[in-house]
Structures are given as structure tokens and as C-alpha cells.
Image (cartoon, rainbow, N blue to C red; front, top):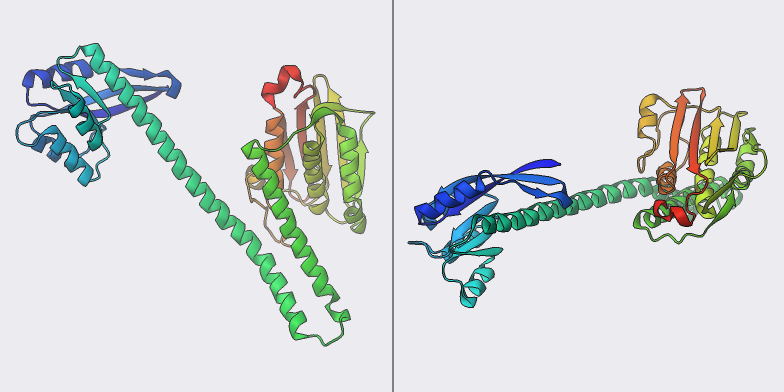
Length: 385
């Protein structure tokens, strides 16, 4: 449980009231179990509204216990000044004149709550606890909103960066076609068209990956759970990558003895296997090897995708599952990708309550191991999916 300390300013012209509040507040600890917070308070005292304004200007408290009727500046005058100065202070009005008019006037000025004189220590503590809950919850909500704005800004910045290069390349090739820089015959432009198609395919994959990521994180992805043969999903992933693997002489083998069933959404398992097998081929050496092993292990199933490719350093492995992260060096600069595939894989594995681990050595290859509960998603386990 987090320990938080809040500052309370008491503004009241009665010395007995000020000191009584201070004696009640000092030893009080507000335990907010739902927020995981235990709060203590330090108090400051002000005899007039003018003194309260000075103290707030110097160092604003978290809570102001404010007497409605003060000599000189009234409680309402103090609140009007706080509003004009845009001071973020939670005000609890103290008044011996409990009336609808008083409540309406104070609420219009922004009072959070009221205490009617005379009040008991437990009443004061209850109001403080309620105010503390409001302050902590409000600050967390504001911090979360700020974090979301920052994440959205970073997301759009990275997205625009990832789309800028392929769009510029396609634009350049189109200018060559428009201006007939290689003559009027279409044949010389064949390589440019092929490069444009590759770039467009990369942008299309980025968009599809973004859609998958958004659906998963928002919980809006429709799911169809059933018994799925993981070995068959792996087999299809290998077949999908066979043309690209064949062009580079990469040999792929599946190691599975019969069906390996898992209760899951087949499309989600396809995303996982397609990403892992695709990476194993893309980041492999020519004439390399990819081994996919699928097996049952008691109440779990395990999938290992191992390649003989370029591998990664420990530092790169540590960054691997972040969004828009691509390992960039002289060996990978010509390998296209969205930088989202492994982030999506990680989120899907987490969705099933599974685990994913990576072992890799530069120039020796990489091995991904995924374990999933075989029965996850069944009636008794739906809370985990």
C-alpha cells in the first residue's frame, strides 16, 4: 500500500476551532483500500482569509478547511480569489449557518463538501477521507489521461515515420513512370513496378497489424473458441512461407507427432505462427534451416520455432516485444517489416495466459518458445481468456 501525505490548511478565526481540528487531523490515517493508499496529513493554520490567500500563494495545500464567516475576506471571497488565480485546491466549507442558500453559494464557487459547526472528530475524519479519495482518484485519472495523450503522440509519430519512407519510394517510382525517364517502352519499368508492389505490400501489412493490435487491446476482436490442432496451424504457416523460403534455399521442417489440440481461436494461433515462421525465414541465411516443433506437455502445449539465421544480441532481445521495434543493422536494413508482429504475438500469448521466451546468438540463430494452457478458454477457464 502506498503512503501519501497531504497538506491541509485550516482557515478559521476561532483559535479553539483551529487547534481542535489540528489535534484531530494530525494522528489521523485515511486508509483507502480500493486505491491501495494510506494517507497521513500535515496541517497549517490561518486566522483570516487574507492570511490563507498568502499561504496558498506561497505553497498551495491539497485541502482547505475554510470557515464561511471570516473577518475581512469571507470564505466566499477566498474561494472567488482561488478561482481567479486558478488554484487547484479542494475546499471543505466550515459554517455555523447551514442553509440552502449557503450551500448553493459555496457550491457555485467550487466547494467540495461542508462541515456544520459544531462537528465531532469522526465527522471531520469522514469528510477528510472522502476528500482524500476524490483527490487521489482525480490525480490518477489526470495522470492516465496525460499518459494516453503521450502514447498517442508517440504512436502517431512512429506511424508517420514508418509510412514516410515507403510512400516516398513509391512516389519516386511513379515520377519516373510519368516522366518516362527510361523511355516509352514499358519493359524497363518492370523492376520499379515490382519495388512499388513490395513497398505497398509492406504498408498493407503495417495497416493490418495495426488493426489486429487495436482489436486485441480494445477487447473488441471477435473470437471463435474451439479445439484447434496446433500442429495443423503450424503446417499451414510453413506452407504459406514455402515460396519465399524456396527462393532462398531455406529448408523448413515440422516436428509433431499427431494432433496437438488446444482450446483457442484458430485465427489468433495463425497470427502467432505466421509471425514466428515469417521472421524465421526473413532473418535466416540463404540455404538456412527452420525447425518448428509442436508437442503436448501435460496440461500445456509447446511450440518452438528455431532458425539458423542472423541472430540477435542480448540488448536486441530485450527490446524485441515492444511496439514498432525492429532490429536495425547492416544485416537487416533490406528486410521489410511493420515492427508490430512480435508485439502482437506477445499480447496474444498473454491473452491465453501463456508464456513466450527467446534464445538468440548473433550469426547462430534464434529460438522462440511458446507455451499455452491446453484447456484455456473452456467453460471453467473463461476468466483467463
